[in-house]
Image (cartoon, rainbow, N blue to C red; front, side):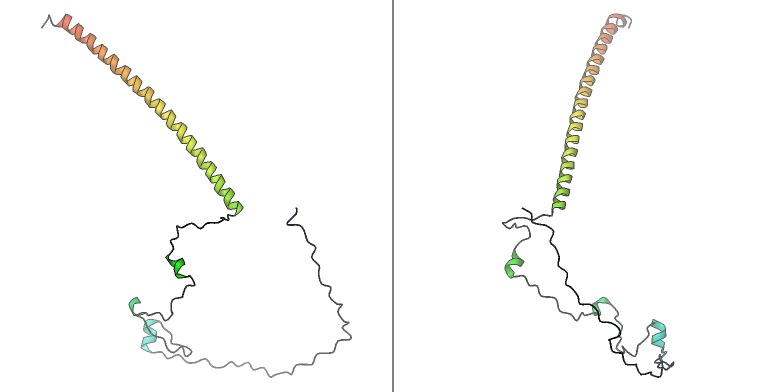
Length: 169
């Protein structure tokens, strides 16, 4: 069963354009006198306030006021109302809803690849820990052997000391 087959798109047929000879002529626009003069710009009042603060008071926006600190600023907008019902607001975000969960296929494959990589790394770490434990056990055995050899050498030295050198002193 094919769900996503190619459909033929039918294009509308447009009528042919008429000949340019049969079209009426457009009327001529009246020629206006073009002036090269522009309107004069408003003069800026050079007061001490404007020069000190670097503020240019515009004639378009004459109501400019200076705000000294953030506490003086009062926003004039109202907070937006949410369209959520009170039951939606009170419900915790950790609750799960019954029903199917839809996941994009590419995101699912990425998650699956990452999960497989993590499994491989855990197995590598586990084998390395086993190797380290084996090495540690061998090291402890060798240390015990060295300790027993030192104890036997110490015992032999004590017997030699007692048999030979105890008669001298």
